[in-house]
Image 1 (cartoon, protein in one colour):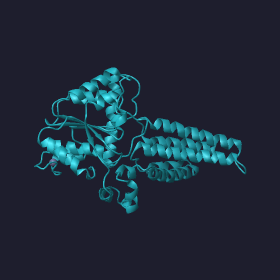
Image 2 (image 1 turned 30 degrees about the vertical axis):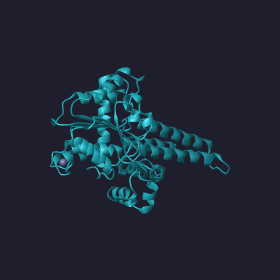
Image 3 (image 1 turned 135 degrees about the horizontal axis):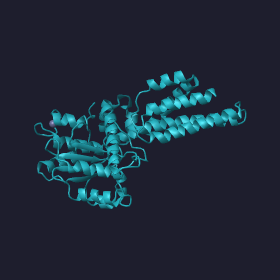
Image 4 (image 1 turned 120 degrees about the vertical axis):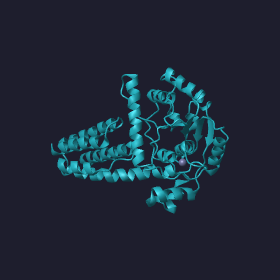
Amino acid sequence: MSMYPFVGHHMVRQQLSAAIGADRLPQVLLVTGPRGVGKQRLGLWLAQVLLCTGPEPRPCGACKGCARVLGLTHPDLHWFVPVPRPKPGDADKQVDEVAELLEAVMAERRQTPLWSAPDGMLAHGVSSARLLQRQASLTPVEGGWRVFIIGHAERLVAQESSPEAANALLKLLEEPPRRSLFVLTTAEPGLVLPTIRSRATPVRLGRLQAREVLEFLAVAKPELATDRVVAQANGSIGAVLGSAAELRAKADAAADTFLDAVSEGPVRAMERVLRQAPWQARGEFTTLLDAVAERLAMRAQRALGPGGRVSSVNVAGILSGVDRVLQARERAQGNVNPQLLLAVLADELSALEAG
Ligand SMILES: [Zn+2]
């Protein structure tokens, strides 16, 4: 799939287009603004303008360059998002692992071009900074511009964690290679390292208008395109997509189905897991595991409370079930297939129930 249309921010787009037309576009931008208004999407739009090979005005929206940017397959577009910390070991291997993690996120976004705020544990660590340097030092594949988008720039590697990687990153932003653009985005500019902030030109995005949010939802999430949802969104598409309420409702339903299947035995549980649609984001999967753990803990509490009918043996079983879920949650932070994790968990839980 291709990215959904970019809505709003017309003034900013005009100014940036004019700067590109006059060959005066600053090479390091820090795009700030409320969460979910399209800051990284503005980065993609800039990439489209710079990599478009069609006629003016750009982006034309019809050429191969435009299609490859919007399909996240352009070789000169590099999109960095916070990722889990790679396994300890050789620095080069860690950089390769980060490249794979990022590619997995991009593969998800090609399938479902919507994203919500990343888990709080994820970051742009030392290996991400090294990967960025590695990619920036190569020549452009197509011979034109190269665009680097760095979402959640407030999570960029801190000086103390690796002075060498941080300094190299600062040097890169100080003197970017010719015809390379770095678009850093953040909803929390105050948390961006001052040394990075001082090297970037700020671009401020405001909230979207209600009709722009509606326009987007009508295409991307028709079931949410209602006046009530738009009013709650308060000018932020992300507020709708990643809303805790939306995630939680989905996770609760999925946890109930999962536990019902587990109680019907390992075969049914496995069938259920195999039918599970892929998760759009790792956050959704961990929310599901949280909901499962919560339900098991509630069962244990009910069993122990007044009128509880379950023996202490059963309670111990339920609690070790909770433990298994928490272990699965921990593993889910790494680069593990969630479906596989859930299959193992289903197997463990039904064995505990049977025992
Ligand atoms: Zn084009």
